[in-house]
Image 1 (cartoon, rainbow over the protein chains, first blue to last red):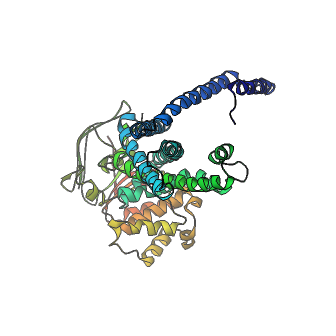
Image 2 (cartoon, rainbow over the protein chains, first blue to last red):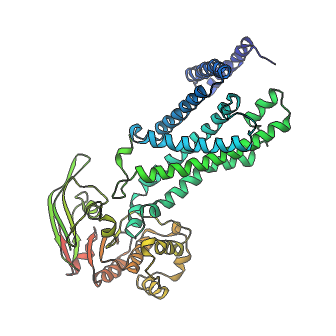
Length: 258
Length: 204
């Protein structure tokens, strides 16, 4: 069933009444709500328009360019959130995310979607979007955690280096903790999936008329590859950090921060 | 053994060392006794190659410290600083971790040595089963020292290793360090070190 924009805008009226109502608690979020809601509507509108085009074209080069764009934006957002130096990190991080995506999507395509053309827009764009969105979340937690830890624990790092550890041996504990904290939200998410909220993709498929059983099969397969890509991208990024964030003296390079 | 030649270092626009020269011969024990902020801890880190210097040379056993020999030169040292935390779930596991490093593979961890050292440093054997999170600052400092002695490094750089100890323990630890046949550089605010002639006081 199609829904009308006119009706959607009706939803804004109760929403703004509620936001006004929050003033009882001296919560003044009117300006921020207007900006956020406005951005949400505008961005989705634009996405709708260009996805219509991309879907009509269904051209593999266009799809690939779109994916490159998504990966670039994911890399930039990560660097932005972790406050790293763009120039130093952008290329290695891009490679790490790109490699993770190509390996995991190729795996998914060849095992689950083997009857479908690799660049078929209806599959590659939304599935890659879900994969990359999750990579983004995972990378931000991982990198934030790692650099905070190594800055706070620099003396311990130096101590253990002086006790004979190689750079990797000395950093292993920092990596271990950061990887766990990066994967934890996803593990928790998988453990409670479907108990309260149905995952967005499943909801979408059901609303679009698919049988619940088909939609859970998609959901299970996607959830598995999401976890896989989060693991894989952490492995690649760990490798990247090990290479570029430290100098020949095994010291943390100050110039990788902004 | 250790020679610093014309070391210049500026950190956050603050000049720390200006043409600093220092020569430490083998088995000498040096006490850096200076006010806070003079760069005592920084000097130890500079010798370890942990802080890049603006210019000057660090010469260890006639070798100028650079990126090619840093790993092998660091193996002559042990460095203990003020704020270290141990990983792993118990002190014992942490000790095993240190001895599992590739470079330490050839060193045998002898339990009898470990127990003797624990006793010497006034620590109970049960501490090995404890989680590192439950150790006091003084206990951590002593465990760190024990590990350094087990690895038997030639040069020790000790940054405030007695700060978390009570008076009697300070004396005990200082006396152990005093009798070691090693080149040692100590940075400390504690005055008890001054009571021993073995430590030569150095400043700049």
